[in-house]
Image 1 (cartoon, rainbow over the protein chains, first blue to last red):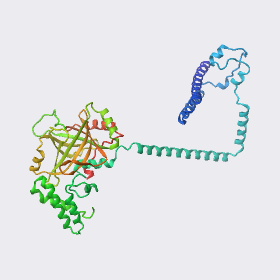
Image 2: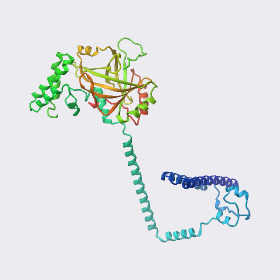
Image 3: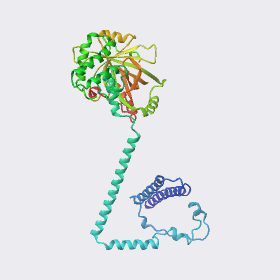
Image 4: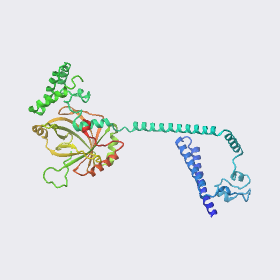
Length: 266
Length: 208
């Protein structure tokens, strides 16, 4: 049963390592051949891929069904300086000979001597500082990391919304309201209304312009009678088209009311 | 505009109660082309139809506080089309679930002495405007994208200026009363226009 498990684990490991090797190969190819066209996001992608694969490899190793590989020992049984076809095939031509030079490199379990030295140094350094100093160092590292993360996420959020605002302003809500009001009850459309809709009403009245020009001269006179005088003339223009003499009194009344509200706001 | 729709409901005398379901939004001039492309893709396959209409709104001020409003619309560019007289009621205060503005609607095609008739009846023109734009159709839904022009000289439809830098987009359906499933269809369609245009129910009374 343990042998079965070992076999399965080995197979899983082999497939993971093969994936890793493939992504490394493609990355190296990319770096060597497309270095002038390479963009940082693409390099990041390759690194992310590699890191993901290393992660899965780790997970396989930590999996509960994996027997303790520590307890297994690999011993080379035969070392020969002759070319071995089997090995050649398995390693895709990279290891032609299973000999004395190749074996220490490939079957090594301890890291390089220099690396071992550095690791020993670091371990003694770490053991030397007292626990609370170590704790403080850990805390400050954590704080700096979280600050950096916050800054990055804020920047990302701001630039995203800024970009959105620039690109996607396809409608203006104020315009929507203005247009709906115009269609629903004529806000901003009627010539009779005093300038509730801004200066463009003044600019666009060539027909009744003469009357209004005369009337605005009268508006300077601080009498509420003056606005009343200009409105019947305007009403007269409108009513001439409608042909309803009976309606004129009520028309004048409403116009006077709306005009006397702002005689000086022009 | 189109002739009044035919209904399947039995006509038991009196008027057939048709309701207009409406969603409105707007789109800026520079984004008009993308909206038209999208509509051309989404809507029924027909020749893109443009229109140039002159609409006059007539009021009858009676003893009641609120005047009676009738809208008369004529086509400026298409000759031989009848005038279109339309009555729109107050928006129904439905529940919040209804996604579109619903109001009673009566559409009548008339001959071209409509304005004289209305004036003789006692109506008075309140305002008028020119609408120029495109019409699309999808099933029973009608999508109209048009620009409103202010008429500078009363009665003269050549001297016009645009009211704003946007086009008004309206999605409306005229259907018999009580078919609320229509508003769900409208909302689904409005979703498809989402980032370009926000079609929503806008209560005109809020904008007074």
